Length: 177
Image (cartoon, rainbow, N blue to C red; front, side):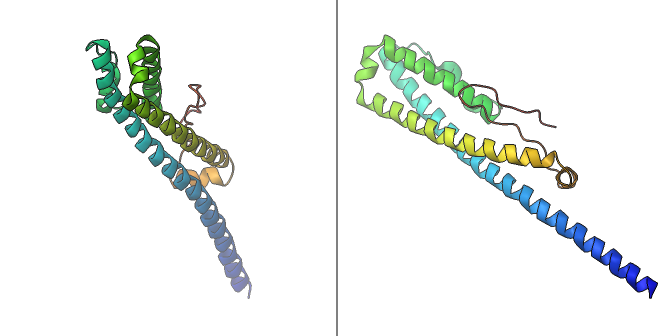
């Protein structure tokens, strides 16, 4: 009789542990999936932004007398850098383009150039939204991973603390363990 009670107790404890494990793992995976979707949007829009900057480079060269102001930024595609670093460099390129529009009035009068600049602003809005979504989910996920039982489950599932995307060129990051 005692052995049956012990077996039932062990089975109950295993069931409780399994329930806690799978519900916690599911919650962590939901945040990871949201972050992955946001990161996909960020990556796609950074590539669109780079394509527009490359296109704008040709128009800037025409107006500025073939001087290649954006040559350092055009080669970003070949670099192995994080999306955060790519975003920072592309923002620098956009700032340079904005400075050039102040120096060269012809750029302001070019309809195609202005249309591309408007597309850049729209891409930046999408990037801000996707980065905010990523950061919100990373914050929640990181907070969970720092608590019991999530920290144990995260180690088993090989999940880690995620860095935040910088917004407005401020560093909002945590260390990645």
